[in-house]
Image 1 (cartoon, rainbow, N blue to C red):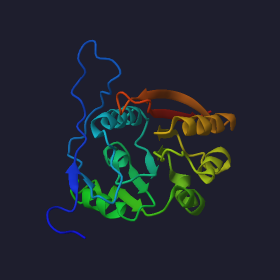
Image 2 (cartoon, rainbow, N blue to C red):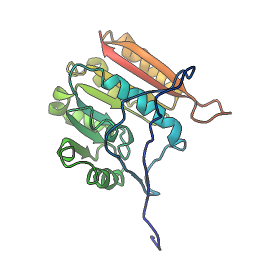
Image 3 (cartoon, rainbow, N blue to C red):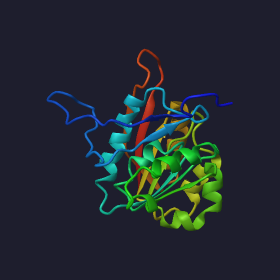
Image 4 (cartoon, rainbow, N blue to C red):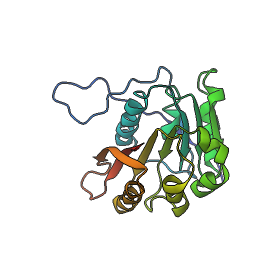
Length: 223
């Protein structure tokens, strides 16, 4: 029950300034020219180390902005839209998705605060990843950029089957952000063994210094 005060906290990803000499491994993306507010009530997932996660999103921005044209983006396991909303100036359209019913309002509240010309390009579907790949064939025929940020258990079987056997030939870049390395190894092996994908880039990020946890960012492209 909400008693008093704000119902959520609002935060922004703050991308680093141009990297100084000798500073390696830090993303240096072109920043957005407008703020992207992210709303986090107690009922949604928030990265514990949002500052370090910003570097992962920065890497993704760098890569997406190198694509020949602004891609049509679909995001699975999107949460409140932390990644997708921070790509909103680099894509032609975004459809983010997640099964948590509390994420939709957070995403919509963020969109309302973005420039008027950006708002119509952003959509959200309250569906889990398996339902998305099995019930949205028309959407995936248009998808050129697919962003995956699953929980520690990794991708559902339906998502792996779709990427390895389904109609996903329009996808030009697959972005996988993993917080469970064993699950990432399993999913990566499946993608590479399918013969459809090759690993273009992979990088580990330590979001919890002193622990053995690692966040993996990987880019896959069609063979």
